[in-house]
Structures are given as structure tokens and as C-alpha cells.
Length: 424
Image (cartoon, rainbow, N blue to C red; front, side):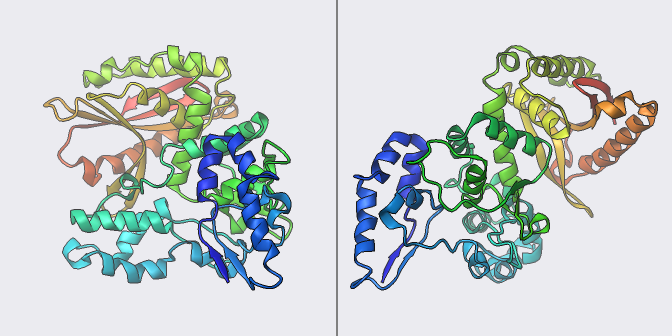
């Protein structure tokens, strides 16, 4: 019996950095093809069974006839829970790794905090449960045990995982640009992805770029996407981003691909003087946000605007301005007493650690073009302002802000224009 674990580890590293070398080792005369061809030749009299695990089938698929006797069993329901921890398993595991009595937090509360960040993976449309990223869970729980306090999972991510979106960018670099643009637009709309079936023969020796089904399948195999059972059927699979960690990773990748390299993004400034001066009137900041968004939309850096794109664009620009006296977070996790975990759109900390430190919480809302032109625009605007005010009231009471100087603002945009910005 032959068992090979992480068969594609080194090959995926090569693929992410050097496509030509990857093609060489998987080609007709490459050593990888020779190795698997040897195993194949021994199956008649020496090797009874071969079991191979890895991240994706690309390395084997690219061998063509080198090992074409293998069967991909990834999406069988019986293997789904092999890929991570279920909640039932975490209930048992956490007390063994963490002193929950000393921590003062029951396992189920720890799990509820971990769930939005680490859960959501499903590897079979017939599976009953989603699973948590086991590597992330173990790293986080180890940090909780070491520090002896209840930590925010979003601040403790396994260093072995793709944290800057580099690997995701490398996948997109092997994909036709129009397909990448479609994936980005799907993300910005908050929609799910759809494939007729997962690609099981992704051979880069036959085609040097992924088609749409192939790249979505690769994103699924690598954990960037997961099966959405509600949208799936016998006719095809619906795929979604599994959790907040992966969603933020997509966001970082889009910032690098669409925003950071565009001249209009680089040259158009956002005026933060009123924030640094801890003023209540931040109209100059709002006006400069309008100018910035108008510039990147005019130059088609972003082809359309919605609440997700608005968050991403403003965060990306403000992050380029970060320094010792200016720190920005997007969708910051906050613990609100009696309401659990909440997420603030933008949290900007100025003059951190100084006597004049101030935290600006900004809740962003967006009016569509149709709503902005409608005769009932004022009522639509007021509805958004009321919703933002309610959310900001909760954010201000978060445990993270206790005893600190906090100012909360609702900002409403119609297209690139900020049409409302007031202290709440």
C-alpha cells in the first residue's frame, strides 16, 4: 500500500512562483511524471492501493497519462469532516487546550466568536455540516492558552495561511483577465459563484491559463470558496466565500489588482487634517472622499459603486496613509454587551497613545442611482441615516471603546458623492 500526504505541497509552491518550472517537472520528461508512472506500472503485481492527499488535483492532472488511473473522491460526503473541525468536536477539544474556568468563558461562547472567522467550509453538496479551519483553530486556541485571555480571532491568524492574498493573486495571474474581472465584480456585489460541476482535469500542460470553471474549482480546492448547499442542485454547484477571513483576503487581493496600481488612486488624496485635529466637523474629509471616489470611477478603476466597493475603496486609500498617528481598520470586530459581535465599517484611530487620542467610527451607507433619482429620495436617505445611527449607538458602547474618546459618524453616498456626513 502506498500513502502520499501533501503530494502537491512543493509543486504548488513552484506553481505560485514559476509556471515554466512547474510545466517542466510535470511534462513528458519531468521527474514528477516519471515517479507516478512508476507507481502506475507497479499496480499490476506489487502495489494494491494508492491513497493520495493534497490541496488540489492540478499537479496530477498536469501529468496527463502519468497517473490517469486515479479517482478524485474529494467531494464525497463521507470525507467532508476529515477536512476540519465540527462544532461538536470543538466543544470537546477546547477544554482540553484551554483552561476555560480560569478564562471565565464557556466553550460555546469561544466557538461563537470563532465561527464567523474560521467556519463555513463545506466540501460536499451532500454533507450535513460545515467545518472550521483546523489549523486556524489550533493556532488561535494556543494563543488563548498562552496569553490567558479571551482574544479576538481576527487578530490571530495562522502565519502558515495566505494572509496577504499573494497566493490568490498568483491564481488570478494564471487566469484570463475578463474572468478575473467577473470574479471581482461578483465579490463586490456580494453574490455567489456558480459552476456546472467542479473541474477534475486542470492540465496546465495543455492550456496555460484557467477558464472560468477551472479557476472557480481551484479557488474551491484551495479553500477560498466553499460549497453553498442552499444554492446548489443536481444541475450545478453554488460556491461562496466561507467566512470573514477569506472575504477580507479577497478584498486585499482586489485592492492590489484594481486599486493600488492605478494612477488616479495613487495621486488623488483624502484630506485627514480634521481627523488628526480631532475636530467634530469633518466636512473637509467627506468632500475629499467624494473627490477621490469620483476620480477612480471616472478613470474606471472601479466600474460601479455599492456599499462593499465603497468600504473597500476608502479603506484601501486610508490604509496607504497609515502611520504612528493614523491607524485604520475595516469591518472591525467589536463586542457589544447584550448584542454580541458587531462589525464597524471604518474605525480610524488618530494620535494613538497620546493625550489627544481619538477614535472615529464611520458607518458607510449607499444610495443606488435609482434611489438617488427617486422623488422619495429624502425618505430613503433618512431610513439609511436612522439605520446608521442605531448601529453607531451599539458600536460606541463596545467593550473595546470603554473609557476612550470616541466620535461616531454616519456617511451616506450616492454614486461617488457624499450627501450626508454628521456626528451621531
